[in-house]
Image (cartoon, rainbow, N blue to C red; front, side, top):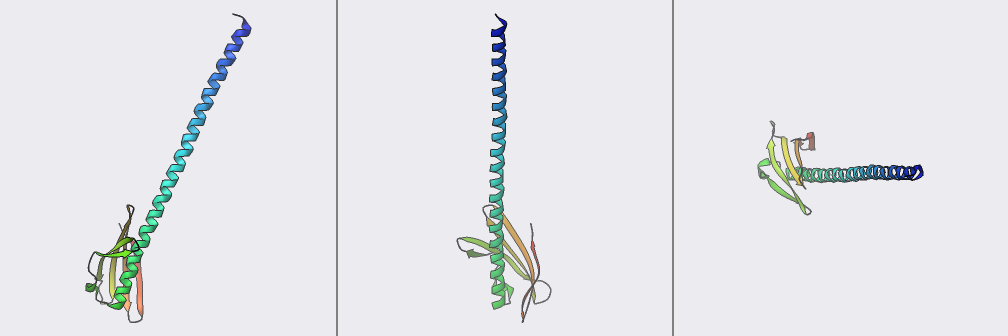
Length: 139
């Protein structure tokens, strides 16, 4: 074998190894970027579901405020009342007096695509209107 043909074989081997290494690096970068985009999409979708469940739970709270304004007796709002909101639903879990006759604790719940929101709202209902004392999401 001549030294010239030996150099050509070595150059071909180096080119082949370089091509394999670059292909591997490009494959790793492509898979990483694709996975990142997929996980970002999933996170955004979960965030959207949580927003929808929060809006549904708030709709139940608003419905409860309206019912209390019409009739301040909380016993007229049964526990676990299901409220339709468009094509979805939410639940008024309970409305109970909290000490004084004009103070209430309202608990609502909504589930949208496995995202759950539970609200506990403390209110005071007087002749002049309804005041919200606290509004918390609870586990």
